[in-house]
Image (cartoon, rainbow, N blue to C red; front, top):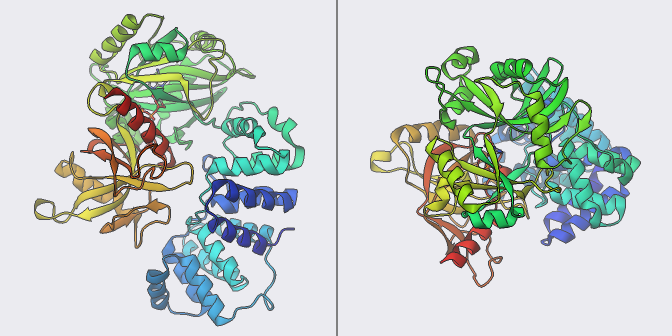
Length: 587
Ligand code: ATP
C-alpha cells in the first residue's frame, strides 16, 4: 500500500518542476510504484474529484471557511490567527503545514497515513449530509489532519478545497498513465479515446493497471455513460471550408440552443449537458418528446434543444433557455418556454457503437429512428461541393434566425471524434465576417469597483482564457462595455458566491483586481481584434516573433452567459494564438 507521504512528496516535486514533460515523468513514477488498487484513488486525490461529476455522487464540499475551522481545531490555533497567516501565505495548505511544523506534530506519534486511508476518509467526509453536516465534516477533517505530517496536511487541504495546482490537466494524467502502463506515450491516443468515451479517468486508470491496453482498446459507447462531445473548428470562408473537409460536405444549420446528449433505454431517458451534468430534471418535456419520437429501443443521440415561441412556434434565442434553466418552477416555465429538438448525430443504436461510422451513415440511422413532428426533427442540412451554394445556405440560415452553419465532412473517415475539436466539423457564423473572427468564451477571474454611475456594482471585470498546456487561466482583457444596468446587477449576484480573498492559484495575472473570483463563470465576449499585450500573460513566450502575451482589443460582453460551458471549456490560449496568426495572415 502506498503511503500518502510518498504521494505528497511527489506533488511537492511536481509543483517545483517547470517543464510539463518532467512533471509527467514524476507522476509516471508514482503510478509505477503504486499498487493496482491504489491507482484510481491517486487519480481522485490528484484531481480533487472522488467521482466523475456525471455520476452525481456526493462530492467533498469543503469551503475554505470550513478548512480554516478544521485547521484551527487540529493545530490548536485561533481562527483569527489562521486568517492572518492566510493573508501572508496565500493558501490554507501552506498555513496548516507551517502550524504543524511549529507545533512539532510528528509522525512518530501519529498513525502512518496510506493513500487508501486518506481516500476513504475523504469519501466519508463527502458522504455526510443533512443538518449539522458542516460540523461533522469539519470534525472528520480535523481528525485526519491530527494524524498528518506537515507536508501531508498541506496537500490534504489543497485536495479538499480544490486548490491543488500541479499544472497537469487530464491530458497530462493520461500521458503519465500511458507511460506507466504501456511504456510509451505513443499509446496516449488510444487511451484518450477510451477516456473520451467513458468520461471517467479513474476507470481508465484501473483498467490499464489491472488489465492493460488490450482491454482499453475494447471500450465502447454505453447507454447511460456520457461521451465527451465532439466540437467544431471555425473558418470564415466557404472556399477554405470546402478545402479542409475534402471537397464535399453536408452543410447544416447551426441552431442557437443547448446541446443535449440523450441516452435512451426503453422508457428511461437521461439528458447530459455539454459539461456532462445530468440535466434530465430540467427538461421533463424533452424526456417526453424522446419517449414519443425516438423509435429506438436503446440509443445515444445528440440534438440541439431550442426554445420556441408558444404562440408562433418560431425559434427564440438561447437566453430564453438559460432563463428557464435557472427557474426553480420547471413545470410553469415549460409552458412559457416550450422547446423543440433538432437531432444531428447518433453515437449508439440498439447495441451497436456507431461513432466509427461515417457522417452520412449516421445521419441515415437518425432518419430511421426519429419520428418527426413540429417539435422534433433532424437539423436542416444539404450536401454540396460548391462554395457558392455553401454561401447561399449560410445566408438562408442567417436570415431565418440561425447562428450560421456547420459544415461536416462526409468522407469515409468522417467519424464522430469524441472529445475533440476537429476539422471534420467547421462552423461559419455571422460574427466571423465582422471585426474579430469570432466571439470568445472567457472566464471571469476578477473585477474592479465601479465609480460614479456604477458605484455599488462592478465597473470592469477581468477575464481570462484557459491554458490547457498547464491548466491555468491567464488574463486576456478587462471588460467595461456591453453592460446594461440589469446585466451589472445580475453580474454582481452571480459572481457573489465565487468571491475569494486572494487570487486563485490557477489564475495568472499581472494586474491586481479589487475583487478576485474562483474561475467558474464563463461569458461570451466580442472584440475588434487580438493584439500583443505587455500586461496580459496569455501565450507569453509562445507567439513566434513576439515577446508579449495576447489581449483582446475593445472587448464587449454579448450578454450571453455560457452556463453550458465549464471553465476548462473556455477559449484556449492555443485558440487565441491561432486566431492571432490567421488575423495577421489576412491583413
Ligand atoms: P459556439 O460558441 O459557436 O457554440 P462552442 O465552442 O460552444 O461554439 P462548438 O462545439 O464549437 O461549440 O460548436 C458547435 C455547437 O453548435 C454544438 O455544441 C451545438 O451546441 C451547436 N449546434 C447547433 N446546430 C448544430 C448542428 N447542426 N450540428 C452540430 N452542432 C450544432
